[in-house]
Amino acid sequence: METILLTIFSFTLLFIGISNRLNTFIRMLTLQGVLLFGITFLKLTEINWINLAVILLETIIFKSIAIPWFLSYIIKKNKIIRETEPFVSYFWSLIIITGFIIMSFIISGSLELPKDSKPEFTVAFASLFTGIYIIITRKKIITHMMGYMILENGVFLLSLTIGAHQPILVNLGILLDIFVSVLVLGLFLNKIGNTFEEMSIDNLSNLKD
Image (tube, rainbow, N blue to C red; front, side):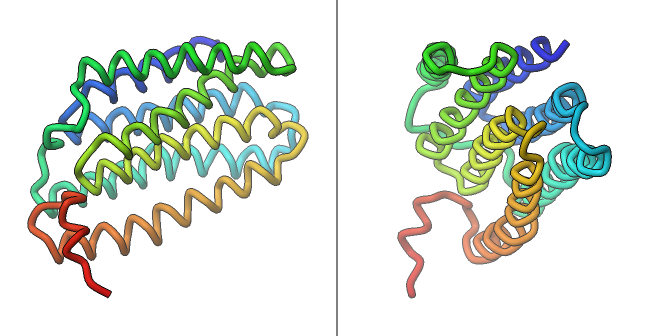
């Protein structure tokens, strides 16, 4: 079952690579949050039930509800519908992200990892690479933040591989989620949206100290 969830997670990365509507990005982030909830429930069955409950609540509340809702609010407030033409075409984005998944599979296979941890490492690396790629190739600031959330989901997956032995690292990941959702999203995006009509990275060159 866990392998199925990880496979679906990989397909969300491919779907994000060819999407230009921001609402589709948000739906994929919501789905990733639900998938991470399921993966966490299946993976961390041996840790203290209090730690498990906190991690599960954080995953379903922040990743599946709070952050997607807040991103939708930002999009509606600033009347943003879709991403402008990216620096790389959607076709090549699909090819590149597929390459990331293959490369992640090769990297995980070359590492001395427990057999049951290799799928998580593979998808985690692919998520990290995809998040960085979205940040680099997309023009809108809000899409950069979505790319950061994809990257952070990869970090969360990496933490799950050692969560049964070091749950404190997963809890630190929870604090990172809270920091991103409350501070970065709340202040940065709202201020940028109030300053510029178009939330494009091109406008950042107009910012002054």
